[in-house]
Amino acid sequence: MTEETPGFDEQSQQPDVPSDDAEPKAAPTPSAEEGAAPAGDTGQDAALVAQLDQTRTALGERTADLQRLQAEFQNYRRRVERDRIAVKEIAVANLLTELLPVLDDVGRAREHGELVGGFKSVAESLETIIAKMGLQQFGKEGEPFDPTIHEALMHSYAPDVTETTCVAILQPGYRIGERTIRPARVAVAEPQPGAQTAKPAEEGSEAQADTAENKESGGPEEG
Image 1 (cartoon, rainbow, N blue to C red):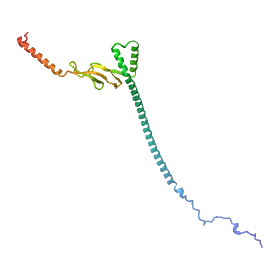
Image 2 (image 1 turned 30 degrees about the vertical axis):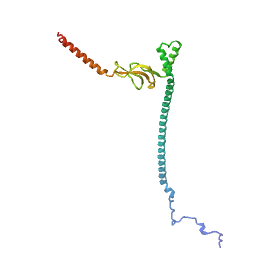
Image 3 (image 1 turned 180 degrees about the vertical axis):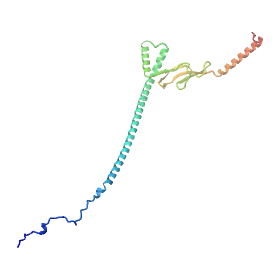
Image 4 (image 1 turned 135 degrees about the vertical axis):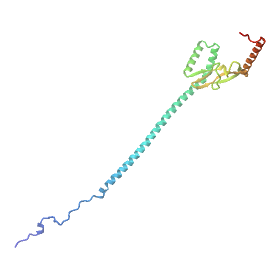
């Protein structure tokens, strides 16, 4: 009799050989996330494009704001410079206006021959300084009367003028550039009323007198 080894099974001695009837394993199918990957990439690209458009819009707005601020700053600088010049001109005009009575005294002293010695040197220095500051004197006898720069203090008629004329300068006028700080105070003369009509009448009477003389003398002599 043969002894059987405990725990030994004949089936366990046979190797595991796959049988032909076993079905082949199916290939793994892609997961839902892997299938949705292309759609996710498209959505991400659209989001990036939208974000880029927003960035471009914001950049355009900031550029426009910067250009507007630059224009406003340039206008501000020009306005400040214009105001600075205006304030300077006003200050100079106020100072020179206070000096006009002194200049009038100097002018009267010069007319009367009293501008001599040290007083003459001081007066000439003063006139040089105010000329450098832009003060100009105007007003001459014989120039046409202009109400924008002349102030008529006296009025008369004269037969030798054809328009309203300044015949005497009582006080000279002064200006700084185009700004008049004091008009010239003058005496004016207008043409004599009827002077224009009297002249032709006189010429007509002289012609009649010549005709009468010719008649009395028998007419002009013939050559």
